[in-house]
Image (cartoon, rainbow over all chains, first blue to last red; front, side):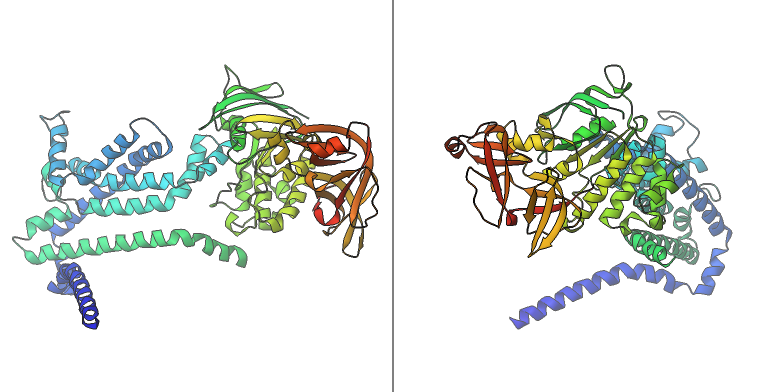
Length: 268
Length: 340
């Protein structure tokens, strides 16, 4: 009996340790491969700075579009009961399960020169923005729907009976109460957008300084200059890790907000 | 004072709510949970879409042509759990209803010192005062209260009920209260309606409902006599209360000032002969009414209603105008503080 227990313990711990090492090893390897000083040096190469600028710009614009159009969509889906609602939710989630290459193909088929709408967008920076927005938006919208649904309907009703129209109710009651969830959704979709590869390379190509984002630059650099690829990889790891930590902080900060305001209110 | 008239139908999940009601001063609707009480308030406030007519004096809120949105109806709705905005301070909660009178309202509801606190930091009674202040801040023409006392523990309930009663007297607004507690209804409102499965079974004064219930359900639901009076003496664990009718009754409960003596009709017995028992409260008088409810009979004597079996009513030959003695034990009573 004791032997079986010992064996069970050893196997559990062994498997857990292996899984953890497996998850950490590639990330650690990136930082171990290149010494910090060299890392900084590599980062100043024009390929890297160009890719960094393209990534920052396109991801930021895409995220802005996601917030601007995704928030109203999420609010309508969350606050209305209509026929075909679950179908609409499925449509919103579809890009999430679509292979990114297929997403790129779809964007080409829709917006390519000979596509459905016939535009000149493919292989421009706008194409990068659209590819990122297409792939990353479901993460935000899903989270936003859940956050809006979590707002107590009685608070919305109370706002209305107190003379507030739909806009005032939205901006002064719903939005502030859903804020934490919306921030979490933003962080998730931003991280997803920053790492976008498949749809972007299909729809926008990989032109340095125009459509070559960090993940694309890593791909084109790694055959020629592995160290530069590693340096960019380290950069992406750092940004993604920062986003993850920020996300955890936002989520942890939510429930404790009342306690902290309690302390500040009582001490003032 | 203005009058709210509501006459509408609203289909609910398992029955249809049908109500015709005029609210002039304070009206309370009582009924078991799921009777459609909250839906009445939601319909009047515009949060549900009934068919019919709702109007405040000549101001029509709903009829065939008109259907005002909630923000266009001058209602002050106080939600069951108060629905205070958790992200706003007390002051900003009240200001949400209307800015001009915030300072005055905070003062009047004794919540000025809590102006910068968040709702989560408040006690149940404080939350209710904030919710009332917020509802009044929009300067409503009618006040709607959804279970105003049910979110409170029994310990604070008596105090808050008293407070609410005093406040309601100063508002000068037609007020509709819904509650599942008949005693709360009788204490707060001059007119009480019993709502069962969306239907108004009976509407009348609390005393009428107890003495002449329309049907057995109303009889079982409108539990207790509530005799108004003033505490006069404390002696040997007995509190003497002088009733408005002049008689003095005793209770083993303790209280001060204005009170309601709560006694259930089935705890009151009716007799013809005077028995000398100091533990008994006696009320002599003429029978004002006799109503039969199933196999029981409710008999009104002075301010008091007794419930006896049909058999003993026959044996005692109880009829209107007859003189009897109603008696109840001091231990069978409770004292509820009331506003003057």
